[in-house]
Length: 338
Image 1: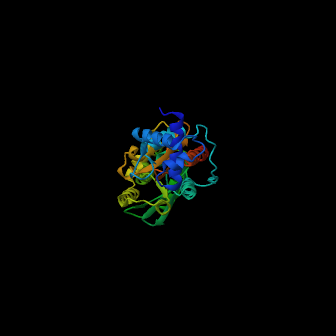
Image 2 (image 1 turned 135 degrees about the vertical axis):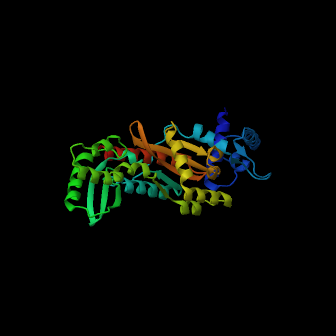
Image 3 (image 1 turned 90 degrees about the vertical axis):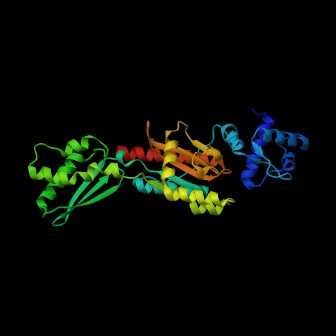
């Protein structure tokens, strides 16, 4: 545990380094009226903080800079416990889920100059809102499924013989009657399609259409919305080219991103902060991530996250991530209750 003066000095170093990305000299700190300590006292305290592993001394003549552990101490103990609510206007009202996710990602990236990543709710959490069965050609039928989240899925099926247009019209009416409001991942979706009162022709036609519904959730990929890579690279000068290459590879592959966000989704913290080497993903070990989950009460559906340099403004970043997650939670509650 640090003394109050050591905590103040660490806080001053972190804030100064965030502002300049330059090591902070002891003479700069000694001139700060908040410290009320002489140069020799400040130097001794800096040496002590360095011995604790909270500060680093990159060169003999240079000042100090925070280590990952120093930032961790700062985030856990030196940020105000009751931070004021971040001002964030996402304008999510009356948007489809896809548009809301995109708007959130773009807004977060623009106001922070960091890399913003939002994971969409899993498809199997949506319900069926409307179904169209269309005869495109005598032997080709298209099934269109519109979900409660505004998603649209299309599947084109080819039949060996001409399809009766009356059968197509009947199927559309039957499917809307039986499946509206049913979750895409629900087990009863299968039973709703297996009606024993149907004729052999009707049953055979529905069997042909069934994969459009029963396989939709299983074959869907998790959707990620990413914005701000160019802005991040422009605003924050990365000295290590391998750091940039690793980040770009992670963005292209998406698999590591999804796994990282799933871990954040499973975390019990209100806001997850991973600093430098704390990140399990190699591409992020010289960066920092701030993430929070959003969703329904007792059911997280996705994550909001910002990725940037370790010297980011943690107070502001935590605030906007927390507020974005809160607004998305209110949005999806309205969508899923509709």
